[in-house]
Image 1 (tube, rainbow, N blue to C red):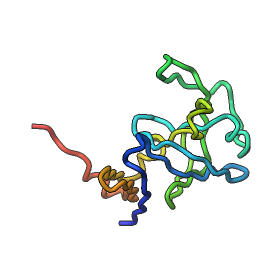
Image 2: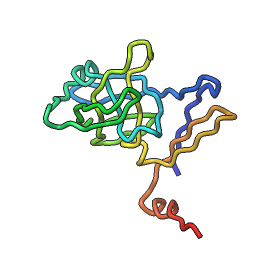
Image 3: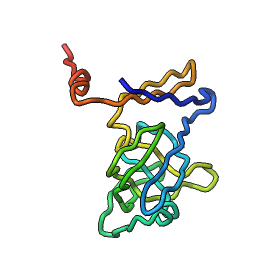
Image 4: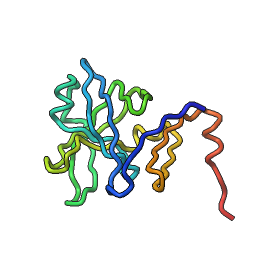
Length: 143
């Protein structure tokens, strides 16, 4: 099984990953690895930079720390993280506070295609490509 590992500082409180966002051009972004985010999230400026058009009619309501917010949702043609590329990734367009020091969030809309392993002791994030047959190994029954 193909797998790629990234290293992070377990004491930092966040896991950061570098991503390439493919549109008309490719832009680099710094994202927080966030399994609690249903969708990836990227800032307005980056979406504009790569030439992805925003349709203000395509919106989604999300719950944030400050309440319920409505944001545009776009489809990223290709997104690359840790050597893997996923096509047609759903992404919310919203700016994070400037003091956050990151561009956005890497959420489930990208991560759902992988087996994800976190080792906080070693500071390792491992993404392994899932195959159709391996999807079946994740089902289980509670007794």
